[in-house]
Every structure is written in structure tokens, then in C-alpha cells.
Image 1 (spheres, rainbow, N blue to C red):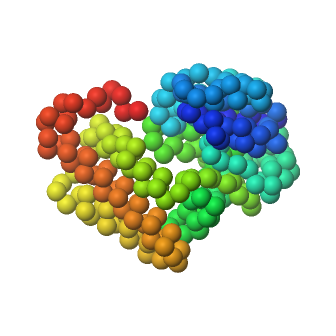
Image 2 (cartoon, rainbow, N blue to C red; image 1 turned 135 degrees about the horizontal axis):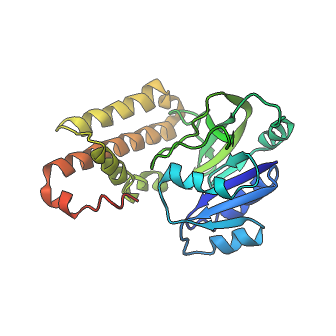
Amino acid sequence: MITGVVITLNEAKNVQECILSLQQVCNEVIVVDSDSSDNTVELATKLGAKVIHQPYLGDGFQKNVGLDFSSNDWILSIDADERLTEEAVAEIKSLDLTNTSHDAFAFRRRNYIGSRWIKQCGWYPDYCIRLYNKQKTRFAEVKQHASVQAKNPKRLNSDLIHYSFENLGQLFSKPGRDFSGRAAKIMYQKGKRANAFSPFTHGLSAFFRAYIIKRGFLGGSDGLTVALSATMSSYLKYARLLEFQRDPKVLENEDFSKVW
């Protein structure tokens, strides 16, 4: 038996398909909702999901909330904009989770912009652990980019679909949704500091990794665009960190008790 867990905030356009995808292999689905103002909760409830209300705590903390409410040891955690492929469903059903020596299983993740599957810039295979035994492991309790801390995971030969962005506009609006500011706050709180060259050097390094090392140049205009987006995100993150150091007024007006 497997419990599906998904965290949501205003995911009315995604939550139904996400739950239906999970229900192909899960006998229980838990939705951890952080005060959605749309009808996410209503839609989830109609499909039989158990809804837990929890103000957002940060990525890893939020994804672990559902564990205390799950009836099963095995957890399948996906985001609202992710779906299981037919191959993933078949492979999960074939697993002997009762007798396995593995504490977790990882899927390849297909990341999409619109209907375009982006295979370069490190966007594929992008292995991520999503099926795990809660008695042995869980997501790292960090506020950003959390992953399951498994000791003996196994990679499955199947994919998870991730509808990352509806279009390129969303890709470039991500830094504008203050992801860079959140990351800068976390770095500042940890004592990390930047210098005048940090935004430029980190931005350039991000472009080089995405476009050259991770072969974004093979992805045509989409590969270049994704690499430029990574560049801008990295540049803004360190520019904000530098701003905290240099501008007392900006620092004074920031509420570091509310990173999210």
C-alpha cells in the first residue's frame, strides 16, 4: 500500500489530474494545502483526498507534514504539476515494497515548457526520489530545493512528467516571483556573503554550466533561453545578497522571520 502526498497552494488547474495520477497506484492521497484562495481544497476533497491545512513552512518541512497523517509506510510524493507516465505506473505496481532492501526509488523527470520536452541544460533525465519508506527516510528539512535523504535508493527505468512552465514568460517570471530574494535571505541568515563581482561571476558560471557543460547548445533556442534564465536567477540571487550587505535601509525593511 502507498500513500500519495502532494503540497498545494492555489493549484485548482492541476490538483485533479495530479490526484487521479496518484490514485493509479495509491490507496490513499493526502493534500497538504497552504491556505489556497481558489477551489483547490474543494476539488481535492471531491476526489476523496484527505486535506491537511498547513501554512507554508518551506519546501522540505511542508512535504514532510503529510507523513504523520498517512496510513502507509511507503510514500509517493509528487508536485501538483507532475504526473506519472504509464511506464511509471506499471513499474511501481511491479515493485515488491514489502521485501525490498531499498529505502527509496527515483524516477527520471521530463520537464516541459508548454508541450516542449526540454532534454538539455540538465533538465533530463533529472533523477528525483519520490517513492520512499517514511520509516527509513524523508525529505531534508530545508526551506528550498529539498530532496529525500535516502541511503539506499534505486533508479527506476521510467519517467515522471513535470509541466514546469506553461510558456517562456513563466520561465522568466520565476525570478520575479522573488525566488531570488528568498534564496538571498536564506544565504544571508547562514552567514554567506557576496562581493561586488559575485552576481556577475555566479551568473556567468550558471550560463556556462547550463549551455556548455549540460549541452544547452544542442537544444536550439529553448536551450539558450533556459540557460539565460538560469543566468538571470543566479545573478539576481547574489545581487540581492549584496544589497542586504550594502544597503542598511533595505536590510532594515526586510522581515527575515518571514522568508516565505
